[in-house]
Image (cartoon, rainbow, N blue to C red; front, side):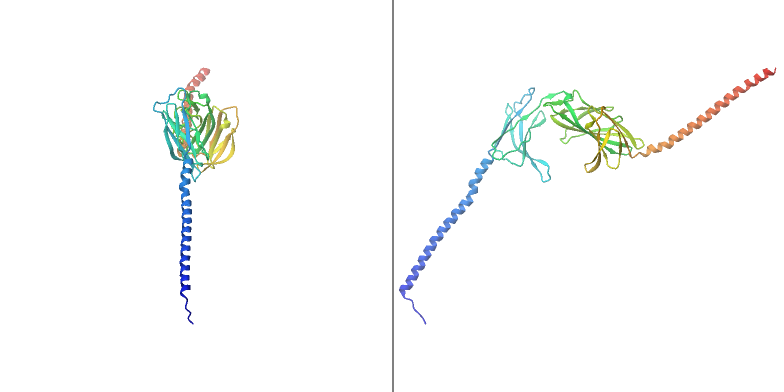
Length: 375
């Protein structure tokens, strides 16, 4: 059954539909406006916050002074100063990441680095060069919210007082060779004074064992070359020692006879500072002045460690055996034996010949005496 709708009712439906559409459209516009405002607010927050954070993060100043000793004058053009940054690598090594800033001091030695980007996990240091020598400040770290850091570079004066140098540690690493041993000595020289100690006028002396061969000085990690002179077994070290510890490494060779030798090394300090290292299972050490202290690994090689006992003497003596002997040393033994046999035979025949001559000279005289008695 078909029902017809009246025109008034149909018109009311049309009006209601358009009214609903207008209401939805107004509601959608309001919703779009709210969404747009939220998007603009959320998206604009980094644009507003980032410049503020960047401004506060870069608002750090590192300021200081290069302090020269009284006998040095600041160059008229100033000194070049560098801000260095050090980070810890994944392997656990401290590595530099390059200069973070450069500046030039004024005539008073003052410098300043502005708008520094801090890294709270890194270490920093100020460096400069004075007359070709590199000097640096202490390592410092940056704190959160810090605005100013004051750090100075102190260039120490030079002294010739060698007595202020102290040997804090001596290590003798003995390795085996064919008919000889190779000794690597590592000295740790400590300078506790605020001055640099110059030993070029009065050298630092080390008395090495007699018979030193193939001596060579090994460069340090910094690449610095230690000037030296070697006369017989007296080593004279000529170097400018900075404040703190300096490591000196040198190497020499000692010949052994028939697989052993006795080593004598003199020191100007207590023997308690001396340690001896020999490769495990190769050389043998015998001495009343050394005590075994265990095993230690050096450059992936197992070494036996020996400590020196406290003693009134500064002379360390020990015997090294089990050294591979050169074949020429043993080939000389038969030659020596043959020479001794030849000398013994020659001496025997010479003695016999002299006895025969003496007998021949004494026989006629005895005969004459007998005749005279008969007469």
